[in-house]
Image 1 (cartoon, rainbow, N blue to C red):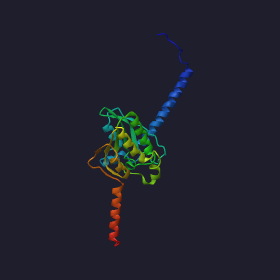
Image 2 (image 1 turned 45 degrees about the vertical axis):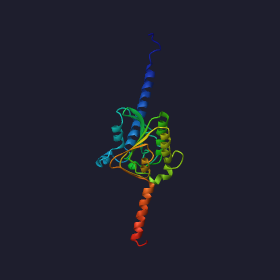
Image 3 (image 1 turned 180 degrees about the vertical axis):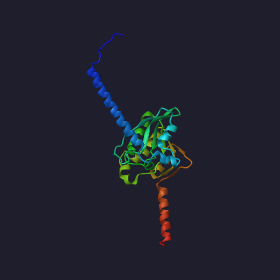
Length: 230
């Protein structure tokens, strides 16, 4: 093959070295930011002492080796004070089949629904809709962060929309599966209603709003009776 072009000059080589250093610096900065997100919340050792796995350990167990493609790790549209949206999502293969996987980060406020999380979730459920692949949830959720309700629920891409999306996917024939661990009250409990299939750990439980309301009413009545008000 006939050679073409001319050798690179020393000046060009130096400029390229500078570019390489800048790129490596940017890569290092991103890697440190990702590691900070992964370490948000409780140390993994605390969960281990409780006999629990982190969401990252569950992903490693569930997914075919080498197929995990994490997405939106650094996406935090409202700069939530936790430093993360509280979910880990991406694409991966499970027994050879590609799926969108979403897991609550149970180290961060026990997997609570927090500000910015819904938009993160909708990005990957949009992807499931376009690619026609299943959605798999790893559920371990303490419900909504009460001090951020006004940021969690409102607008067309708020938390309520994530459940609408489940119904939309199921109507299209795209299954939504949920693997459920631990205690899941309120918003965590609704994960037991909308998916197509549920796989529940023997020690898990869920509680939605009406059940919690009845329990509060019962406790209120018991206190009132003890005080002679009835």
